[in-house]
Amino acid sequence: MESFETIKWISNEKSRYFKRAGVRGADITAFGPEEISYAREFHSTITGYTPTPLRKLDGLARILGVRAVYVKDESYRFGLNAFKVLGCSYAIAKYLSCRLGIGISDLPYDVLTGDAVKRKLGDVTFVTTTDGNHGRGVAWTARVLRQNAVVYMPKGSSMMRFDAIAAEGASVAIRCVNYDESVRLTAAEADEKGWVVVQDTAWEGYEDIPLWIMQGYGTMASEAMEQLNAYGDPTPTHVFIQAGVGSLAGMVHGFFRAHFPKNPPKIVVAEANRADCFYQSALAGDGMPHAVTGDLDTFMAGLACGEANTIAFGILRDYASAFVSCPDYVAARGMRILGNPLTGDTYVRSGESGAVTTGLLSFIMQDNSLSPLRDSLGLGSDSSVVLFSTEGDTDPERYRSVVWDGAFPTHGVMKQG
Image (tube, rainbow, N blue to C red; front, side, top):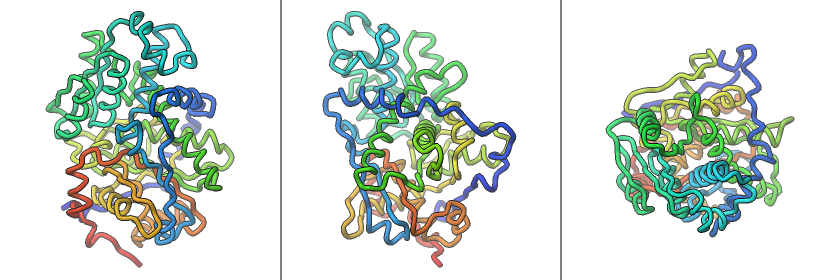
């Protein structure tokens, strides 16, 4: 049963994965301040852009025994309830800037959506595979650019997320295969039809657009840095970040490493235990990516990816402090914590893929069976922890089943001591 599955982890102190000669030092220059500033500048030209909130949850920090907990709330992003639009909008803009022969700094949103650009480009079809949030971002971007979007979803996808993508004007279909196989089918079809693949995972020969997507996510991290400074806490000690294919996690690692080269925060990667390709790769200890296959049956839909982004893999391999494989109840607990705030804390509406890091932090700090991980990470009363809630209630029925009705309970799991 789900409630008896355990949280599994491996740190860089325990894995041969981190000790192979020559594996350290993946290039992170693409996520340095200058490169990320281009994405932030582009996003700031989009109508309706405003930084999403960084919530400081003092009550939660107090009960968990850390100095500070910050949660970046992406449920406010462009009215789309998730961060993914940051990546696909920037990547599509970069792709079009290359086609036009114009630098991205000279293509603000009002120019890119104008009649002159449309006449020069003609019709372009962008295609992707998604569990929901990324596909909605691609569809939204294509719509505002007056272009076309085709979106495929893996089996088991939420019909509410399907409908949200279709409402943006995209052609949407659900395939009877898992996410990774759907990505392969999408790439093959795009090659036949001359479509442009906008996928947030990379493979050999397909790296430019995934890199631009990762850089687009950097706007979120850049905002968080400014907000931490405004709180008077500019140097977090720990960052927890979730991983599916690893695009977001790779960017976060690169961003914080680039900004704090001498004293970077410890960064913890949280994965769904049914799709934990980074954790499994760390266990293998050979410095190579190892895929997780099968149905990838987790309710953390945004993390149900069994194969790593090749760009992100090297960064996570070389710089992550720990990989944690999380059963579904971890995310559910995070949703309930954020949705039922302690006195003085702000409510955060967080979906399953957004809340897993909050749930994980609570388990690490309160479950005595995880005290070795807590000690390994040096988490305690001096710790300042940043979490990214990457989505709101993008599937409202599932959200209510967890927060209202107690789906995926933690009863009998916690071992407090």
